Length: 482
Image (cartoon, rainbow, N blue to C red; front, top):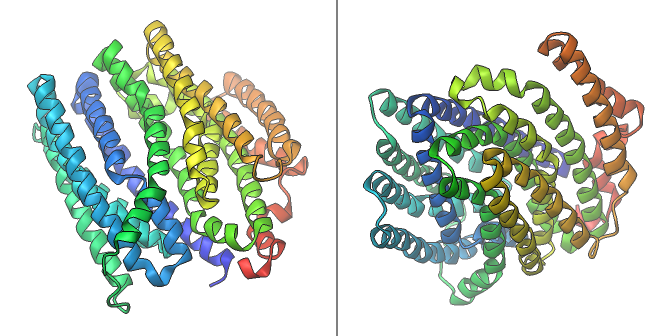
């Protein structure tokens, strides 16, 4: 299977399975938002944020490094996976124990402490399963890897909706979350065994590989922790300075916002194995892949941001109860940050593929400092809207910072074609949409979105060559790399 078909196949599976997974997750969160009310849903969301940060520490940044290493040395896949599983077994026990200790010594009230401790137990199976799924991704079997999310979402949504309708609260939901994580681990192990059934052996533990993976992964861990704190510190600070209801409003808006963000992240993540190989075989091919992907992240991201500006009110009113009305304005502000956010994910994958993740981690600290500082000021002053504004400003800052860092390794991308021209077209299309939507129905405004891609094509921003840019990649670099 050639590069074009393989990448297209992987992205197609990722999109299809993640669409199913995100739809199930959206259904569950809409049910929880209604049944638990804004305060209960805010507590549920805050617990998941804490557990997510703990789980990230337990993963130790090994997933991306494992994908990189196996994609380069597939014949050693099992011997590379073994030390990662061993490392995660150690870190998950330490992190889970740390959460329990913090809850016990911190005097956390019972209605928050018990569900938090139950949810913390899910870190162990979740961490082991994501390690196995990273190995599946490295073999470019995104279908098997993405299906793990679907399995988890089916169990979580079916059991969660049932439990909530039977009168269960946040604690019952965390028991369901733990059970779903266990089912996900069983599936991941079965899928990897199916993939490796013809490759017996190779599971000998090598301490040299253990320490190599730990050393290479630590900078990624630092970057991921910084990134997670960067993205979730707003929820934590809202929990400290504002009410649980406001946490619920912000969490509901962010759940809707995560749907387009996740598809952008998946498209970029599917390219990491290819980028890792091109770094060793074709620098020109890597540059072409990076520039074209960045261009389409920008073009599609601006289009989605326009849709969110026009459709945020009808979508929120359709899906959420009336007490979540403040989430409408949050969606508009968050939507504007989408192209910057997905672009930063692309930069992160490029840095990992080029083996410069240590420098990336240090630069990320500057982004975190800006994010925390703005959140501390704006959340106290403006509440949830301050958190949304901080997200937008911080994403713009991070994008510019990482772009400058990238230019140190690669030549500058074509600014007019990739950035400036799409922005001008997007602004013009947005103004037209707002005018049409003001004087007609929202559906008429939605129909006006066709103006954007047509204008891009007429202006020459989207070309026939662009539509087949993986084929350009195939001939644009050294043939040995493709």
